[in-house]
Image (cartoon, rainbow, N blue to C red; front, side):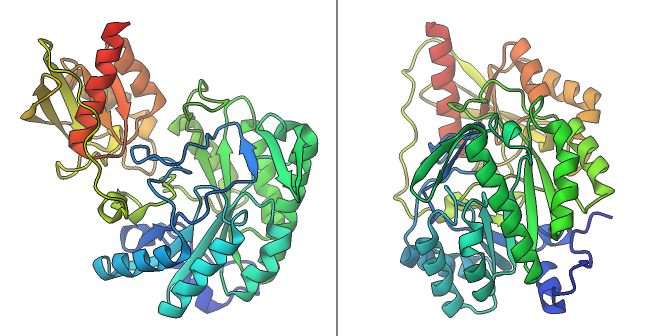
Length: 425
């Protein structure tokens, strides 16, 4: 059973909170098919530097934690909430997950919550934080009635933490190495314990970094369970361009599920996380944030110059407008052909997807290879996200891989731009 809203051992958790949790798509597997959430990007500043992160958050064409196409003020956040609620009636949760840290921007975070609480007392609020400032702001979180908080805890050992974090900025001072990691870890654990004691359901995120903290994760899970955590979410490393870990391989789904199965013995595991953007809107598997951008509609990315070369590009899209499907979840590729200035859709190619988004994606090697062979005549494939193994195999066949969240039009021109730059080298 994958339902995450199981009864908590914490007696301070009320039945009302558990009922609301059944409508929280990140805490309940069943809820993520029914209820929508929106992330409000009101927290741009961050107080730690993670080696798997870069701070280029003003990006509309990436789908990973920490990126957004805009940063909102509290009044803008309220206006956007009202607009989204009007168009998406099944919206149940408002989360603040960046693009920096919710507690490093506490004034904006708190004001945004207060404004929306006044407009809609029934909405469920959720905060995500690295935990550095939890001991200071946890009492206010409890006082405001926020019952769902996510804390990212990647390790318990400061010396291991020194390999994950560049520095920590705490109360006006910058701390590096194990000293900074130690401050962060102590504050995370203290904050989790405090929140759990007051009936807050704490979800602990753990980024699984191969060769760094993977063997240490079960110890983290046991510790946060002891402190009262409700659930843990072990997430794959997504190497970000410009980060220290940019060249690390992405954690495979097989390794991830093996670790989740191991830790499930100690604490309930979340298995349906999509590692959402800081401005994500809609169901977990159907991000609609581009529909609600407060910025003026962008012009398509700069066109590559028209030339003699004709490109064939495979696009992963639900309805032909947005690039919004993972490579392994695609059941049909739209094949476009063009010269870099104009494109036309020449055919649709049906494939058997090998990933449901929950389990065993990496075990379907034959299906994965079949999909790759089905687009072997293409110069590029454009999808929302793609795993390390298919990316590697596509590259071996000379097929460019583009991961983006944008319109199909922009995705095509972005792919051509990359193809043209490769040819120029």
